[in-house]
Image (cartoon, rainbow, N blue to C red; front, side, top):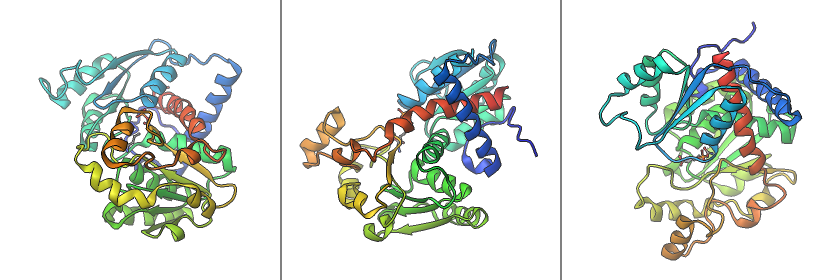
Length: 330
Ligand code: CP
Ligand code: NVA
């Protein structure tokens, strides 16, 4: 049956069938070709979208802005300090106001319930630009990048190292399980994903031909992997006090040369970014001073190596977000 996503919100990958994800990836590829060849694609001229950010962003915000403009949309950006949302006006009221003015709403913030509430009340498609639980637009960029680099998705051995119960760990497990990849979370037990979600993903994997494995063992978890993926050790919204515990829990899960050498020779390294691979950021420098750690989730050598595809991955955020906007508003 033909896929039609018109009017749908994009809140988490769990809400979409593998065929619908496939459709979005193919659409993104078309948009990428058009962008590369300079073919105009202002298909949504006359429509308007609003971007609500309660957390900071470089890639997601810029992707929505550029994708929106390429499609001919009007784009309004609201930062955490410049709307009434939450402080003077409930989410439901904000949603109903924005839904009268805009054709689509992007939201980045804290709870998944909140982005769901926006979708329930606004009457227009809502796109999740990251919550504490899920980061679905990142998933499309990651799947597209894997397919571009390795030629396929099904059967790919994918290892995620680090905080496996954050938005990235959760989302990657779901995306891999849906699309038939073999997902391994290589992390300390304390940071394994929540059991209910693991069960759901194992059921999805049984249908797609993929698998879900959780292990604390770095050697076993990274052996012959096609993709090694990591994320920062402390996510947005977590208090600074967790840094010390998190560093101690995760230092043995750093992606370094030994990890990459244990994976397949042609394995790729991926990261959603931003990354603490050196001390050239204020947080990186601060952590180095306080704890003597100069590289965190990935060494600078791996980050800068030929195996690293992180900037292709970042570019794909824009093409895939464009596909989501188009598919849901066209
Ligand atoms: N990967 C990602 O979401 O990046 P930003 O936080 O810069 O949007
Ligand atoms: N886990 C990270 C992802 C950033 C894209 C965070 O939430 O800060």
